[in-house]
Each structure stands twice: as C-alpha cells, then as structure tokens.
Length: 378
Image 1 (cartoon, rainbow, N blue to C red):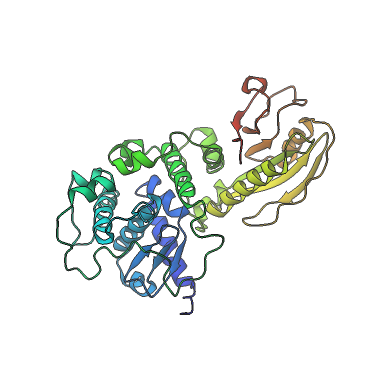
Image 2 (cartoon, rainbow, N blue to C red):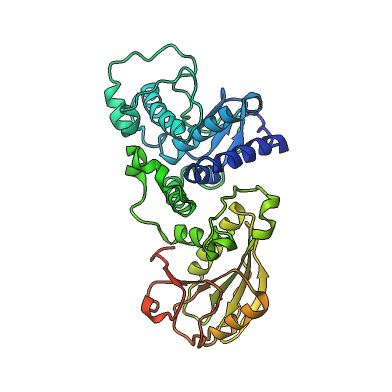
C-alpha cells in the first residue's frame, strides 16, 4: 500500500485560503466547505471525492490560480454534499459523472467562480436533478477526455489515510445537516437574494424540510456578539484565526441540569455538538457547568476534548447558574434541562437558549429565552 501523503502546513494554508475567499462570495457555499474533510493524494489528477472526503492533489492545487482552486474545491464538495457517489447505483459511471459535473458546474458558476474551459454547460439541464440529466444524456458518446467523468471515486485513493469508523456510516445524514446549517448561516448573512436553493432542483430536493436541533444550535452559537445587537454578522471559516475577530469573540456558558431529568445520551449529544461548533468557529469559546441546586465547574470545552464527568444529582434550581452570569459575563447561555425547576425572578440580559429533551416543560413554561427541542434519538 502506498504511504499516505502528509497534510503539510502549505496544504492547510491552501484549503484555509480557499475557505476564506469563498466566504466573501457566498455564505451558503462557504459553510459547506467548512464541513468537508480535505485529504492530500497524489493519485487523483486534480481532485475527487468518494462521497465522504475530498481528495486533492497538493502539487496541482499549489499551481492553480486562487479562483480556479476555489472552484475546484467547491465542485468536489458539492458532489459530496449532494451524495452523487452514493446515488449512482447501477448506472453507467462516466455518464453519471458527466451528468453530475454539468449540474455542479452550474452551481460553481452561480458562486462567481470559474469552471474548466472544456466543461459542458446547459442552463436548462444544470437546474434539474442528476437523475434527470442522466436520462437526457442517454445515447450520447462517452467522449475522449482522459479525465472526463473520473472525479467520483468508488473508494479512497491508495495513498489516503484510513477512515475512522465504518465506511459510509451516517455520511448522507451529516451532509443533510451541513446543507441545513449552510442555509441557516446564509439567512443570517443576508444572502437570501442569492439563494442557490431557488434555482437548482438538486439542492431543493435534498435540503431537509426543517432545521433539526443541531442546526438550530449552530445558528445560535455561530454568531458574534454584535449580532445580538442587531448588526451584520461575520462569517469565519474553520481554523482561520483572524485578527479582525479579536474584539468579536463569543463566549458561551453551557449549563447541564444533573438533577436526574437529563440522561447521559442527551448530555453527550449537546456537548459533542458544541465541541463541533468550537472546531469550526475559532471565535467561539465555551465553558461547561453542571448544576442541580448548585453550580459545579467551570470546565473548559475544546474541540474533540473529553467531556467532564457529571456532578450533582439533587433538585433543580436554575438561579445559581444565572447568578454566575454577573461575574462571567458571557455573551450567550445554553442550558440543557427538562425545565422543571426554580427560575430567576427577572430575565437576564444574556441571550439564553433552553435545550429541552423529550417530555420536558412546554415552551410557554419558560419565562424568557429561546426553547430548542431535542429529538427522541439524539
């Protein structure tokens, strides 16, 4: 087996630079790039995807003009997000790849990025589903292009590192959540007038009907303090530590009710999702507290870090956590609880998100803040 290609600082800078440039063009597409895992590989001509990860030839990527690189990366991320590899089934591979390329190139062009000079364009077809385009191309010659229809891979290249977990596990659901989060960030950024979902049937068909609790949580935390004052937010890419954000870092207190009304699965789901936000948005910082009739902590949270063991287990009193806000002065508070306990008499100035598991207090029972409902299976 060929040794894996190392992820060098130069490769990371190429990817981070592309994410940063794209955020100035489209909050929707930039958010999708945040969710993609980019892996260097010398066995792809330029780039390709197996539906889970995007593989990029580092030498080719380094030789491309910035806007061409941005278009290339977005092209592959869209293939992955739209499950073009998994949806092929028994269809002929090259025609399926050409059909998917036609659609994706239309989206790349809509983002204001260049597409390959030899790429086919059709303003009608590129707004249909890939299955419809595949049918319309029936009977056409496969073409003589050496690399035509070769970027949808049946598996990882031989020089790619092994994947974690079982192959394909939850990939389509993860990309559906990414699409939901992309639309949520787009709505906050004021880009609705350039909504890519309005023009392309592929994205309309695959977009979730509603945002799930995870997407709502990302929407609540992926803001800067100025957003809560009514100003425009800034979109920041994963790993991009921008000096301009020094004064806009967002601090969050995450409180978990340990009185016995919240099970371990809900705690792991919430804290794990918060850690995901921390990894994607370096301007967000979070501190964890456990609470029953007292507050236990603080515990600093970090991306991928261990979740501290729960403390407490008595009754439920929300007031100790809210008293902490006077000294911590966080920008937001996220409180995981069933809602049955003693609330403070006055609403705090800190924006509050109540995360409520199934069977918890009804929305109208919370005297202030936003209420977010966990799904039955987190």
